[in-house]
Length: 214
Image (cartoon, rainbow, N blue to C red; front, top):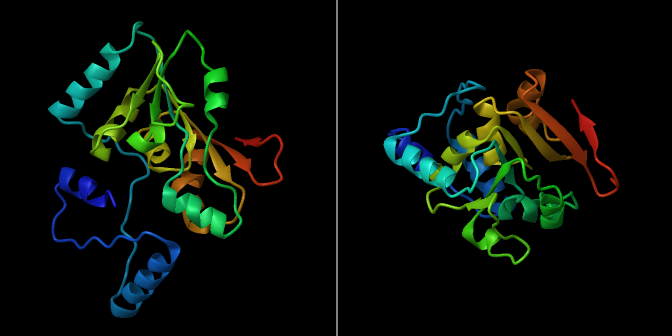
């Protein structure tokens, strides 16, 4: 649903954006598209220095000023999208999330931390700011994604924030559902593992201790 924010910022015109809220809508719209037009996958670069405008740079400067100390920043995105987690539950797959207790038990005073999420996600009482822990939750997702470029390292679920970190060649660690997904792996996982930008923790319902895949 935030696709137009990307297209507006990158000045992409002559397009139609089709959104979906559940797997049934996705399947139906995909069938209509494939039946009505010749579809080709857009060519892509796996690495891209995402450009920031003056407003984004100012927002990032404000984020840095909110920290008491000037020290390396670790970005964390602990949430999966509502759609992704609903799809996982429906198909009895592992959901995308990192527990707040895991995050706060791992906080190191030698680093600053940015926790990325929507306003509603971060309203959870389990999440709170500290002098070296701040939230990133702008109404325009492009502004939130631009803050990923402040990070020296990124930890997250398989999401657009993890993708933003990988695209900008920021070292990233990601929890990944241990199930077959060829599209996900081809475009959002394997290229970054091969370039040693991304390490993944494969998880499933039976996993006690995730295995690190390097």
